[in-house]
Image (cartoon, rainbow, N blue to C red):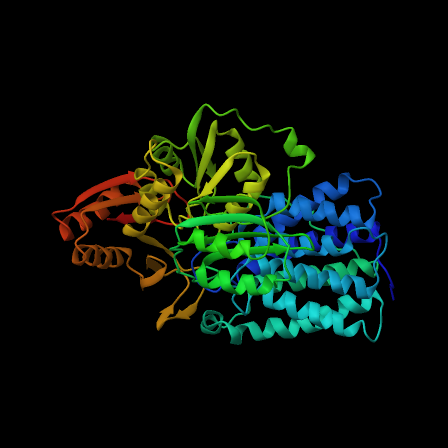
Length: 543
């Protein structure tokens, strides 16, 4: 049984983990809890890990500290989707605990797993139970308990897997959506897959990816991974660093800040406390901070930010940011040539290809920001699974970045239409947020698997209609769904309707859909645009 790990062993363990996720990514994708292809958990985790593999393979004989740091940095830059970002946070904490070590015993590695869990929980202010976070937390607890008996690293990881599997099986009971679908959490399956591969590698049985594997761009089925419909309503992003001049407990400050706003990230050490929080009362927040010590830095803006301490890597230094030629710039994420043209016409400097079946990485977003010749860059993710990656891109660029938390294409378009180049950042965010809230989004797609949700018996191949983030209805007849959507829009008195038809819909069929809405909403202004988007037959906005 292996007692310790060094840099060479850690590198092999990460490479094996990436191979295992690559092999199992389709299975992980298919475990998503809702039968709409909207987030590829397995694909995102695979692409995130493979970013680390590329850097590790270039490193010559790294120490344990170096291998862990390389992994953490590469995962941050390559993080795709929420699952990829959380994965990067878990390994960021592991790297922090392993810093300065040439070898790690079971106890130190168990502590590293716990530090990774702490890092992830701190960054996700309101983590839901029954997710990868739950599985990682209980796995780490199992490892820490086991090393009291046996300090071998192999024993620690084995115990983590045992406890993690128990936690994974229980996720179906912790999350009502998982329970409805009868599946365990996809991200949790990914974490257990990673731990299993790391243990196999430690035992001399490295996992090897298929020859055509790691970066193959294949279209795979995926579904909604969560149903959080809560909108952030706090206007000011308040960021500060305060020195620890008093004996005040940072956890008490964290608890108080949680009552004052949302999107809270608090990081502390022996000398400082650094905070990001979205609040409507930044003055009160700063006054409270002053009770802990003197302000070192403070910034108050209407932005969606999330803290990270990573800086530009050597590769990123070669990708210098474009010199500002104007005050504001815009970066949008979408899939489909038609939608891309719409965003460019609205003023987007850069359009990143991505969306439901392909989430761009943090580095992809940072590079688009750097290519934008503006002082301040507004980023429109246009998909809930891209928001976290967009927020993580901020420290990878020297530009000021404002993430507008658009969850859908119509929200992003409405927000951009509300933009005023002569207004301040704060004024623009207020108007864009209002515009985002005022638009209703409808999406028509298909079911990827059999399921039951909110009383609907959903069968593979059914047409699905979503209104907002909720399931509106299912049918084998897409026209009946479209008629019901049109009638709902009419009953709500919507005046402006835009129908974007997807890559799988021809113009003649789209014209029939236009007539359905014209008949139901005779007084509305209705536009039909070839969006060219994959996965969704129709994206419809109504205001």
